[in-house]
Image (cartoon, rainbow, N blue to C red; front, side, top):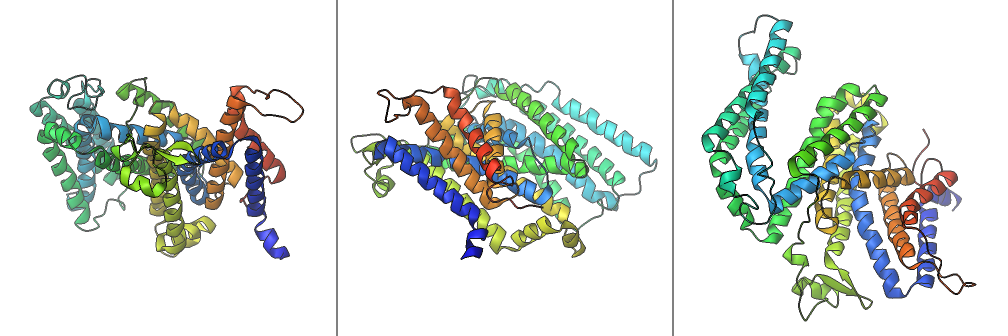
Length: 497
């Protein structure tokens, strides 16, 4: 019994604190109000978890404090919104990225088959200069402002025919960027001769396939926009979840490969680089989508209204899809229930991945001893990139899910980044279970803090409720973090080195 208490002390303390908080809430509010606050806290906790879990995975395996994680959350939100409401931005920028990446992959995989390029280091720098020149040529004058006009209709504020470039000019850009990628790929192969060796035809097929896909999308941009916007809002939302999460994962993998990997032995540089990414990325988002925010409509599956609404229970909602569900006599938005369910599903899925799969075994082994895993013939660098991409994809998925709930604006990334770090510290750095517990505590603290600011606290010896400043709600999570660290400096589930 003593060993059980020692091993599960953080869980027991956390459970007792949660029970005490619930008992206090029931004493202060009616059951229907307390239930609504609890569900609101679970909604925030689910969103915080999607960000926090990625942070915890990345730090646990790689000892990297990624201060750009909130940026990935924001990018996911904007990418999901764009696919849902204004897909022509993607259809006019994705081919350019595909051409650049396809050319680089094709050249790097084909380099060992080509005659040796004379000149050594001078030739390499010459190829890099050519790649940059072609990149500038391909992107010069490309105007994103008309493409970013809002409105869920084909064309938005500016008709698509006027917003996007003519096919001939667009194809010219594709060819210039493909040539830039080829020059850059050859320069990489010259600088890393072992990495440039051929690994079979897969790399060549992938590079050629990306180039072909870019050329196929170019003449179908207008038709593609109409086809996507012609889909039901439910299907568009599902595709937006996939596109947003995939975009975040791809960006996260690119960040790890290009910026984090050379700095594993320099943690201060990692912090500076990721902080710089936040500043640069936020300004880029403002440059593409503008400084004002957007509101993403809730899919029809969660927005039906009528005489039968709100749904009397969850089972009835499966048939009528009302915008709200009756919870103890008080309506609660059904979309928030979806966010809670999404958080639970991702928690279970990542737990199964870490505990029941070969990749999870490698990740857990890499956390304990990365050098030993490398000695067993496993490419730890590739595992690092996959984990970074997985964490980034989770954050971006949270951004898409949050878009119909809180909207999309350039500041959401920093707000969720701060709360995610607080949750990680509360739960314990590098602990997946701690990330979930910390996110839940932070979400509940914010929800109850907002309610306390709104209605105050009724003390037995006072006639009127005590009112608090709105800043108390924002500070409640910091107060909980300070209390946890005073009692347990490593966090609830953290372990001493």
